[in-house]
Length: 270
Image (cartoon, one colour):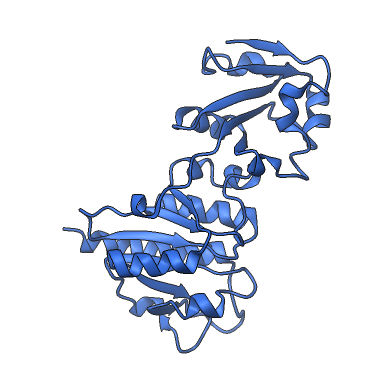
C-alpha cells in the first residue's frame, strides 16, 4: 500500500479531512468520511470507490493487514491529526470514499416482490437519529430510504458512525420532490403510505395490518410530518402511551414501527 507521511497540515491531499466536526464539505464534494475501524472496513468492503485513509503513526501497524494495497494512506501524528480533523483522533483512522449515487425511483422497486418496505424521513434533522433509523431499517429488512433537502445527511461522519456503516448497504434516494416521488410510488407500483402520527384518531400500532408495499413516513423530531405529507398518508398509525409522556424519540419510534411491520411482512411473503 502506498504510505505517505504528512509533513504539513496544509497538504492539499488531506484537505477533505479538515474540520470534520464543524463542517460537512464532503457532501458538496460528493465524498464521505467514515471513522472507526469497523465502519472504515465496511466502507472498503462496499461497492463505494475509496479515495484515501488518514491514519495516526501509532495505529498504522494495527490496520495494515486489511488495508488494500492500492489505497493511499496518509500518516501523521495523533496530535497533528486531532488538530486537522477538529476532534480527538484516538481511534487513529478515517476513511474517505466517493458517495454512492442516489438510486432512481424504479431501482427501489422489485416487480417480482409483493412485500416491500420503504422508509421516508422528511425533516429528521439530527444525524444521530437518522443514523439509528438507517441501522434499524437495514436490520428489519427495509428496501430503501427516502430523504429530501430537509433530512440530515445520511452519509455524514456522525450518521455513518451511528449507523455502523449501514448506509453503505441500504439504498438511499435523495428526493428533490419527496411528495412527487411518493405519489409516483403509489400510482405506478401500488405502494401505500403510513404516517407515524401523534393523534388520538390514528390507529394504534397493535391493530395495524400492513399492506404488502408500504412507505413508512417518519417526520421531524419536534413538529412531525408536514400537512402536505400527512395528506398523502393512506394510513395514520400511532404508538399508544401512558400519557405520562407525550412523545418518544423518532428513532425509538422507528424501531417499534419497523419491527412490527417486519414481522407482519414475513407472514405476508409467499
